[in-house]
Image (cartoon, rainbow over all chains, first blue to last red; front, side):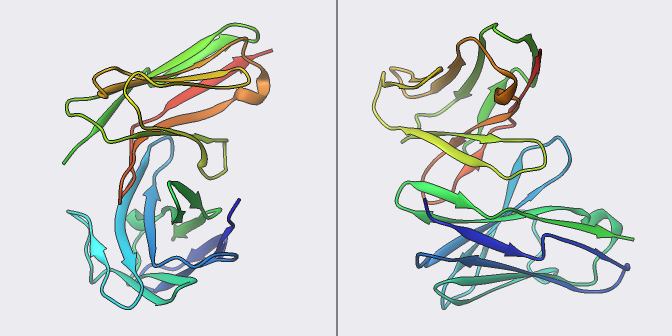
Length: 113
Length: 108
């Protein structure tokens, strides 16, 4: 199946700093990628839809100025958590579609101290 | 927006017992997808159901889509320890919206 990579796999940062997470589709082009957040023992919550060449579409309740999304190319989307705070600590997962199937990246575990 | 409700939240079974998780929607779904997430891992696509009343099997896993396309189930026959994880149903479409998931614990 298609492969989606994420970098970094984990990051620990101080409160107030910004963290960038990269999502890449390695063997296919993705005009659309999705960013999810998952808190421990909870489901995946869709944060935003990343569109290549245009602005991301954010779900209700997700601050677009805090979670900056850039879909620079057909194989790369980035999520920047700006001025991170401890409550932003979570597992962030991206995905991309290839037909009906969604392929997920391995996730990035963010811990904000 | 549309939501898919999933039950039970978690289930403990003895190895060899069967397991079923259920997914329900108040509105008609165009399709339903099922994913498995192992502890510490990311969701992995299992299957998509599209047709009313559809039944699909993958070895010990049986997936059903209701006649009204408002509910779905995943049944595992004779569970094994490798079945441990969280099973999510998801409303497919342009955006994939996940149910709450059912955590399966299997005791050897």
